[in-house]
Image (cartoon, rainbow, N blue to C red; front, side):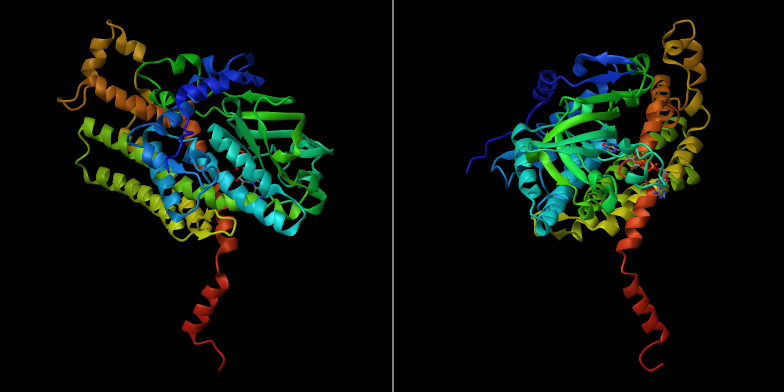
Length: 486
Ligand SMILES: Cc1cc2nc3c(=O)[nH]c(=O)nc-3n(C[C@H](O)[C@H](O)[C@H](O)COP(=O)(O)OP(=O)(O)OC[C@H]3O[C@@H](n4cnc5c(N)ncnc54)[C@H](O)[C@@H]3O)c2cc1C
């Protein structure tokens, strides 16, 4: 049967943003049209590129998939993974796109849908609820409209040593303040999200809840321009940095400005609610997401490290150091880190299991172990970049001086590396290094490597919690001869 395509292109995505009217503040100003704001342009472009990829003749076949829900060809960005092959496809695409694109943004949002798929199914099994049915219909809506999704998981959290209900200000975790026949009313905020230039925001608890926290055990979806929502977004760079031609090259690829979304008594209709008060089930969402998201994050880290490898190797080539043994050794360490992280992404897909709800959940221990290792090695990788690049990584001249005819001849002469490499190429390679190592975007890149998708400690907690230590101890007993006879 011929499948109809519901795969949008960049123009349709941008038009969809223009039809919305979200309340967005950026750097002190209320933004009328997010698609035309100079400080958000590169972030909108990041998502738009995601829509390009799913229409790209070379990538399309991998980026699109037959939906089992609506019997149409859809983007993987809204697909609920059904098999190991689905997870492998996501890993492959993520790694490939992250090398130049730095964050796929579109693809990884579906990781939360998969987690919700399983968690709502489990919640309904125990209670007289229809959250899973709500989610199924909602995912069909996302697929039919090929929506740009954002994730609202992280609460402001106030004092980290206190539970949600113990906070002095009860709004520091998002909560339900009213239930009525039509739906629920929610108040609070969600941090670090990309809702301002998406169509939909999916909200989930960020942690486990106790019975006293039951008002905080809430999950739902909301259009980003719903009444009562305010998004305060931090731009990734200044307008000047965004418009430079040579310096700050990353900003042209690295969108993803994040914001805090405030919910001032926002009404959510019941058919968009995926959890409301079932506190025992709150933790299953972040826990399952810990597997689905981190399997993909391992591939993302592999791509990010590959980007660093390229930058380091290029500078070494241009300055004539690439043949030195210690340079090769340090680059090899980065290659090993990238491949190990990617291996964990594939391995966790391979060892995944099909949940009875139909979604395929990757192995959490492998995903979290891989992500942990690739994250904590970031410091080593950045050290290697500084080490191999030398001082010019933080003191490359400004492009204005390079382009100024009075100073350019000096810079042409004294910044020359290998004789067959134009000085401009060397300078551009160093400007990339400077962007990675010393700019605001470079800082965002590091923050994304370490904290996006949960901090390293959350990887460790997950690994320890799931690991079969008793089995390992039984093995030790057997080896030590500790058994029934003694
Ligand atoms: C680039 C980027 C993109 C992101 N995208 C999204 C997104 O799309 N949607 C979204 O919802 N979130 C997103 N996040 C948020 C991300 O998930 C959080 O930043 C991360 O989970 C850490 O939470 P936090 O920032 O509140 O830091 P904290 O949780 O405050 O962590 C700081 C430190 O305190 C420790 N800590 C905190 N609480 C405890 C505790 N109770 N016990 C022991 N130690 C504790 C942590 O382990 C860590 O070492 C993004 C973050 C980044 C950097």
